[in-house]
Length: 384
Ligand code: KIV
Ligand code: ZN
Image (tube, rainbow, N blue to C red; front, side):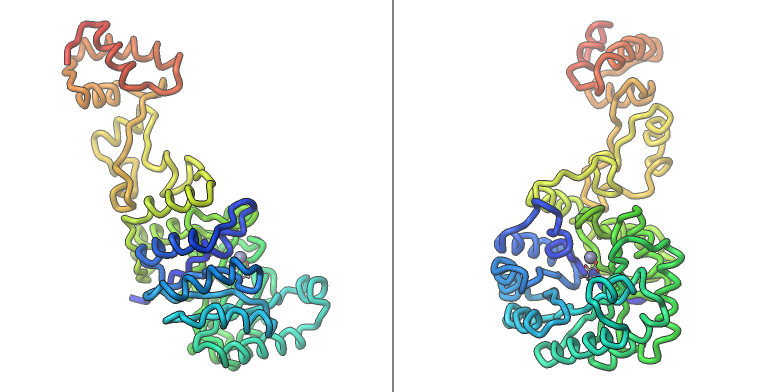
């Protein structure tokens, strides 16, 4: 099995969500949770961006002992000096430096040329390698960068000392096959690629971040950059829980990660509360409805055998279990299931009568509560 490194950027790219900025102590609390969850690398912040972000990376460096602590920089000496300073107490420090490589970044943002960008990237990597042993290079907007040029950039920065190469789909532009082909192109065309790990960093502007990350892993990437609940600027980043559970569900992907999946839902709740951003109910894996069944046909199937409509055992991700929700779309099997839980034994005739009353109540209220059920059963003289 190949090791897949889980690089969590909840505290850097994730925290860029407007209004969700965290204080250093809050970041440390989440970082402890991430370390216990089993992530390999924690990107703590962008130290040059603000004094508080500098403090965050310094605090993580002092306290996080198992995971690598990473700080982001631009390909600028001052950024690298500040990041190295923030990382000075880390057991395993990593500087994540890089520069835009797409035509639009080079021409409009950086007002530069392709050759000049390679020089700046190489210089940043060499400069960072003088400060820490582990340097990751990002080719910003790699998703829209021409593959041939991207391969030249990657070869040069590996020669300069980068051992992890991040291929961000910064704007969430790629289709899964295009992103997979990009990674495959680098695997096959960069002569020194076997001395580095390729990393995916996909954004979700078209809802494809997870699919693109998986395509990248299938093509040979061995690090995935992600956030808890998929939080991040605009439509967010790849969500950690989705990638991990896809790998667990599809064993043929043949990579091994160190995530303790039972901590996924507690971690999702902790992050959501800390940044004050609710998780959408239908969010895969961690949404409130991820294991809730409300239509009659599905409920009947799940009551007979959970796997009929569930591919994940909820307890494996830290959920209490599957839920059978009673609504006007529920069937008799679900009503009987809840009746039994409340201690009522209904024979077929009584169940039929109770179901008729149930539908009348359910058409009036959105969700049936226990108190409604007691009223329904007691009205037709069933005793618990
Ligand atoms: O999306 C992106 O390109 C980034 C880089 C700074 C790594 O977040
Ligand atoms: Zn990003």
